[in-house]
Length: 349
Ligand code: GDP
Ligand code: ZN
Image (cartoon, rainbow, N blue to C red):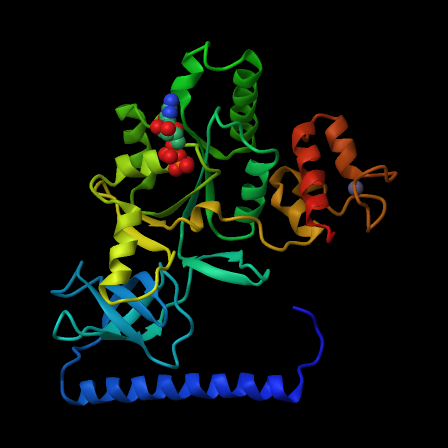
C-alpha cells in the first residue's frame, strides 16, 4: 500500500464499514448474553481452535466431560484475532449443533505468518512447535529453498526439521545421476553438521514412517515444501482415513459458506497434532531486512558485528569477518552464496 492520504470520501467509506462491523459484533455479543442468561451456555472451559470460518471458529474441548468434542463458536468482540492452534477459554453451548462462545485467548508460544497478496503479513497458525521441511532427490530442491525456510523459522520460535523424503530413490542408481546423489548427500551432511535435525524417509517404508511418528508426538507440526516432494503421501499415511481436501470442503458447504483454504488441526492417531491447509504448505519467507537474513544463518552469528565497516555488505568489502570465516572453512561456501542470493531477492525491483 502506498502512504498517500485517503480522500474524505474514502475515509468515510472505511468508517462506515468499520461501524457496521462493530454493530454486527455487538449484536452477536447481545445474543450471546441472552444465551448466558437463559443458562444455555455452560461454564468456561479450556479449548483449542481447530479451524477458522470467517468470523467463527471451531473449538475443541480440552477438559471436562466434553473433552475431544468440537463446536462452532462465536467470538466475543473484545477477543483479539484468532487462528488455528490458539488456546482459548470458551463456553460450550448445551446443544452441540448450536454455537458456543470464545471469551478469551491464551498467550501464544509461536506464530506462523506469511505475506498475503498485497504483501501484508497475515497470521496463519499459532503455537506450532515444529516446521517439517520436506525435500526430495526428485524434484530437485529449488536453489536456496532450504535456507529460505530455515531463515524464516529462525525468526519464529518454531523448530525446523529437515525431512529428506523419497530416500528409496537413492538406492536406485538408474533413477538418479551421480551428481544428484552427491547433491543430496551434501545437503544431509551440511545441515546435520549445523545441528539441525534431519530425518530420512520414504513414504513407502513402514519403518521410516514410524520414526517420523516418533518425532511428531506431543507436538504441533506443520509440513512445508515444494510440490511433488511427497508431503501428501506422508500425511496420508500418518492420518489414515482423513481426506484433507474433501474434509475442508464439506465443512464449508454444510452451512453454505464459501470455500476457504483455512488451516485445520488434526490429531495423529499415534500422538501429536498437524496443522495443515493447501496454502500453509507453501509458507514462504516474509519481509525481512538483510540483517535479519544474516541472523537466520545460525553459523554466521559469532561473526556478525565483527566486520570492519558497520554497513558491510559482506561482498568485496575489506575487513569482512564473514568472508574471512568462509576462507577459514568456518562457514560453508554454499551457505554464504545462498545468503547473498536471498538478500538479493529481497531487494525491491
Ligand atoms: P506433494 O506435492 O508434496 O504433496 O507430493 P505427493 O505426495 O503428491 O507426491 C508426489 C509424487 O511422489 C507422487 O507420485 C508420489 O507417489 C511420489 N512419492 C511420494 N513419496 C515418495 C517416496 O517416498 N518415494 C518415491 N519413490 N516416491 C514418492
Ligand atoms: Zn562483512
